[in-house]
Amino acid sequence: MATRAFRNRDLQLRDYTHLCGTARERQVVSALPIVDRFVEIKSLRGRRDFNPTHYRELYGNSFPNPDERSPWSAMIGSVGDMNHIDHSAKLQAKYRHLRYHDVVALKGRAVAGFTSFATMPLESGKSVVYDLYTGVADRLFMLGTYGIDTEFRSRGIAHYFYVLRHGMAEEDGRKLGYSSEVAGTMLESEMIGQANDEQSIRNTRTRLQIHQRMGALVLMIDAGSDCWITPHLQPKLSDDSNPLLMHLLFRRLQADGVHLNHICEIDRELATSFLRAYIYSFEHQSTTTEIDEMRSNTDSRLAAGKRFILVPPDKLPDMVTLASNDPLLREQIERDYGSFDGHARKVKQVLGQL
Ligand SMILES: CC(C)(COP(=O)(O)OP(=O)(O)OC[C@H]1O[C@@H](n2cnc3c(N)ncnc32)[C@H](O)[C@@H]1OP(=O)(O)O)[C@@H](O)C(=O)NCCC(=O)NCCS
Image (tube, rainbow, N blue to C red; front, side, top):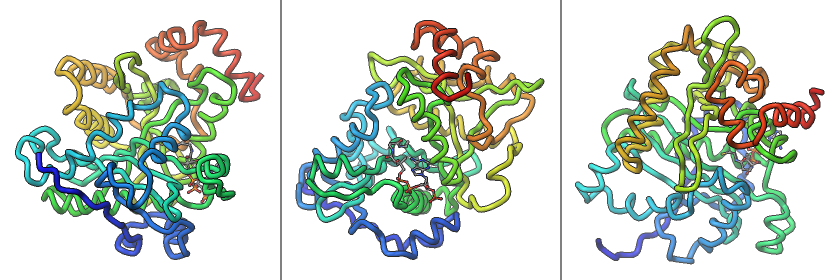
């Protein structure tokens, strides 16, 4: 492959203001950003814009549990391929309409935030973002890494990232000729209580609260008689990890509106298209057997559905409650945390429900 140097690309929020989907996004985008630049990474070797090691450190700091992280090589491995894909039939055949992007928010040369995501088509033809990993530096990280006493969390950076990701999805859809419309963003999150230690259990709830603030709702299958099950099984991300039932969330492009605090029904085709898009994103990196397993698992879960709903995260039962209707989830709890009853007690205690 050619060895020419690639230059990182500066992104301008003003180019994407038409894709602000909430009042809060319009507000943060019209105010002065608290960082200096948003840069799409094209080169991990060059240290002109920032030190790539700091991106890796912020990734580890934002996702301290190794089980929830993809290996760094996989996380960043597609940057090179994405640089060459427009001129390589082999790479186009490998990734088809899937495009990966890594964007960092910089204060000077300090990495204050990052978002790693893919764009791809839904069956409707609209493009969708799959938000893989997003992290923003807290004060401790900034002090430890740069000696800068600044808190970047809770200052709107995650809202900027939504707008940038939707803008880049629109560009990809247009460029690849499948769409000029963006449906929104899909992302995964642990269920409430899907963690081992007390702090991490609390974090599972906080993370869902943050997603809810930004307009994301959780896709659930309603199997009738108040029995909700998740349709979403994440395949193993590395040789020493396990497949995980988790939550799949969807944030519509336009998220202002009444539905955000209510459970709303969506049609089976739309629900199915999110799961198909998710599987599509694994096709270039998983074996045929793994993909077949994902498909058959998803199909059998979907078949149980009487209706499909998007649920505001604060209306979700915790993992232990969901497991009472889901034998596979119960097995997962026993595999990951030892005893079902022990984990149930711990979750209820930490979440103040005992
Ligand atoms: C999740 C994370 C990326 C949010 O980034 P951020 O830049 O701090 O988020 P923002 O400031 O844009 O806030 C987004 C919304 O969430 C809310 N929020 C942020 N932190 C919160 C917290 N700890 N508890 C409750 N709500 C919170 C904000 O109030 C905001 O809503 P508002 O603007 O309507 O008030 C950041 O906390 C982080 O890096 N966490 C660790 C990694 C992680 O969990 N990533 C998410 C999974 S991909």
